[in-house]
Image (tube, rainbow, N blue to C red; front, side):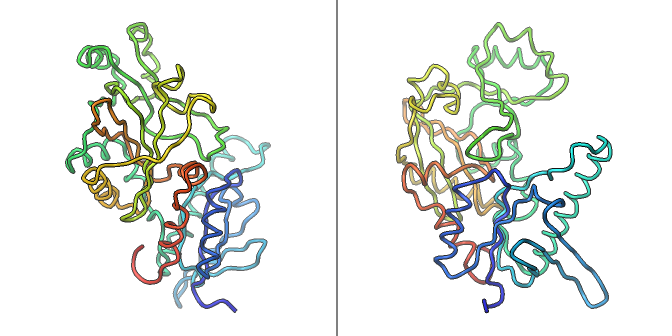
Length: 331
């Protein structure tokens, strides 16, 4: 028999791989039981029950491995929460309603786990932490350099900002669309904006976008922060025509990850930023300029780190497993 609270839930989706497997391996080494839950399998493949009564409450999860009660769960890694896979023959309105109900039931289940004393990485309600404008304001207040930024659906203001940054401007989205290292989902890359684009901004009527001054790059950093620890990977896409603005557009043979460095004072400010956002884990992106300045771009509460462990051997899975397996208090 496993002792009480010896289970760690790994919430992800059916197309996820590597990172969730690495964390599961590290948890097993620490004597706790990892249990993967593919959230896109609810409600068609998983059964969740939340019950409130005069005697109190309980939450129960039914999986292929059997029944799991909330009081058995030590902690939860919120790797990914995806919408359910439902029968495509459902009427659109009914389909959308089922998605909303399923999401609400899942969130209520997780809230029940938190009420039962489970720790979460990251804590529930991280949506506010992912707000890019809030991140930039906090980062600047903590002493990190951030690029001049505009978020708008007003084409006239975009044109004015273009003049203010002397035509050096990029556009990006406020929220990510991809869900795994493998990609395969819709994705909008950071893109350079030129004069020829300024008369083609009618799409802003449907969705605002982020516009920033384009910063010259020596290379870029991806920094995985776990509590007070941080792990740095560096990538240089300057030799790639497609990847100069966004390294993710480079072809695999054009770029590779190397171990990077972050000045101690920048790292300390970043760790404070992640904590100020209420996060245990975050993946931060920086531009390192040719003069050696470190310009903060964003923290993604669910950002990818698998390539840093796979290519550089950085022990990020071990750091996450330490936080998930620890007993008592917040990780």
